[in-house]
Amino acid sequence: MSNIAIIGTGSIATAHIEAYLAMPEISKIVALADIYPEKAMSVATKYNLEARVVANYQELLNDPTIDAVSICTPPYMHATIAIDFLKAGKHVLVEKPMASSLKECDEMIKASIESQKLLSVVAQNRFMTPIMRLKHVLDQHLIGKIAHTQVDSFWWRGHSYYDLWWRGTWEKEGGGCTLNHAVHHIDMLQWMLGLPTDIFAATSNTLHDNAEVEDLSIAVLRYGNGSLAQVTSSVVHHGEEQQLIFQGEKARVSVPWKVNAQIAKENGFPQEKNDEDLENRIQEAFHQYPELLFEGHKGQINNFLMAIKGNQKLLIDGTEGRKTLELITAIYKSANQGVHVKLPLSADDPFYTREGMLANVKHFYEKQSSVENFSDDTITVGGNYEKL
Image (cartoon, rainbow, N blue to C red; front, side, top):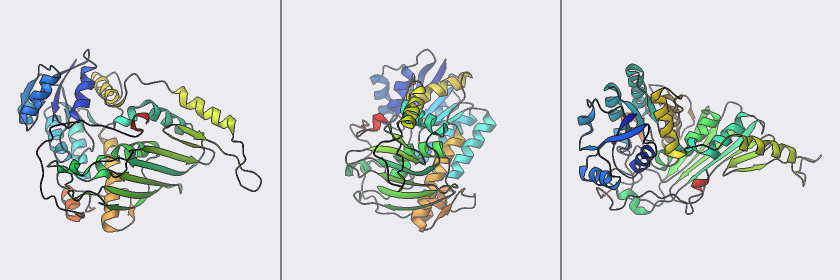
């Protein structure tokens, strides 16, 4: 049994709390921390939690009854809180994005190594059955060399979304839709294909003049084998349709799941009939991977708890979380400096530190006013997100 503290009780904390509550035989929530303790008390009441509530997470650092923490605060506090708990001997699961800079990521990884405690970064979409199945298909190399990948991270957020005091600021949120929405799809991309060799990107703020950050970005990624990927990150797309499409030498596969394997005629044009044998083999490989018992946050939190017990390997550690942030950081560097960016980014790169990032990014607008909390901060997902 692992005793858990939830740090930050905003909207995303709900997913963590419900996941832990779904596994009462291996976890128990014993503490909640929030700078708005009345919010934490409300959450404790809602879920009937017999948990200690504090306004300052530091009051929990030396609590011997706490084994692990879920960090659900705004991104700018992730590194500080994670390092404090790791040094205090607690395992840490931190929400995406991992941190505000690569330097902070490296400091978190160092603290995990030195404390010999687990550090995991939330990437819950990896723990979806269709995603695991797609990864399995790609690992079988059935579609041949991948030539092109299309990543559409299409979300829609109304103007008031950025009224919340920390959202839409480089200092507190760390970025816009590329970092805080497309992070899921960018993480899946780098997990499936690895990191590219170079990136060129552009960002814009088209519809949210109450945010410093971008609400739309487009990036082109080039890989060592010559293949290209295009990543569109958005909070301006009505319908909120997301997809990852991999175009291979022999076939195309995607999530939501679709397979298509065309055959060329003598003149290079496609035949009317596809390669049904290959399509059937790809379908078989896709469904060969079993349904997951737990999906999304539940899946990742189950893996985190099992890894604490020593019963499973931690699937997403700090190093994996850092890779995704490095890719996103490279997108921001390219968009803000108008240059092709080569990976990896070095420690002397101006975008390696939080201070360097803040000094080099463009403010599309300045926030003129804000609210402390929304009366309803329920997270809704639209489009085909549940099918990923």
